[in-house]
Length: 243
Image (cartoon, rainbow, N blue to C red; front, side, top):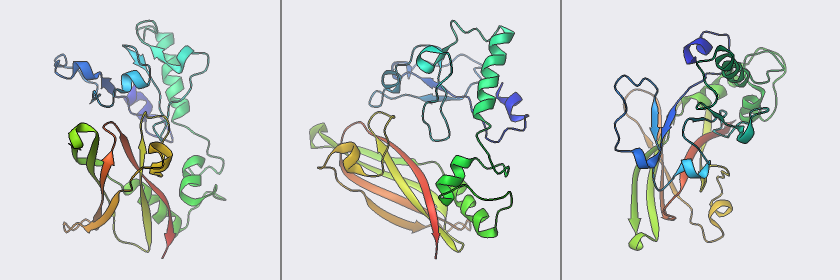
């Protein structure tokens, strides 16, 4: 199904990924299992947080937020009952994914209006982008996934420290603002630690280190102590400002 959607003129990419429950981390997958898998962890336990049942299909948008499915209880399809071997069910799920892959694009420039609002602060006028606007969009797509380099428990397990880093472009006339967001349950995210952890929350120390590999990039690193034992992280790029 993923390849069929990729062959369509969809605005966004669709990725289908399995999430293995934490308790099954040591159980090998069947030979020839072709679905990419992510491993849930006991300290995160997203299965419990999201109320997942075995063989559930949960849809998330480009911000990793759950997306409601019209006329479907719990906004979740379960393949034990929604058999994709039936052509009508297969077609229904494919149609839902295609709708998600084609968000609102009022100016017809094949850039989702929500992305334009995130990057530029408003929806652009017309289909053509200026060189500066194209460069800003390039920054949004230039971030590598957030890497969790180290998490260590301290104070007999009452708090933890983390070292996280991501790589971004380091050249050009416009510099991005790379923002680390946190969440305790995957539903509410914020770059303000006090909103998630309360008024006693600590702030991470941020450092930037050039990467001398000819890629024109740099590491952005966060070193953070005094964290709860279970915390989720993600990184995003704020609308950059011209320098």
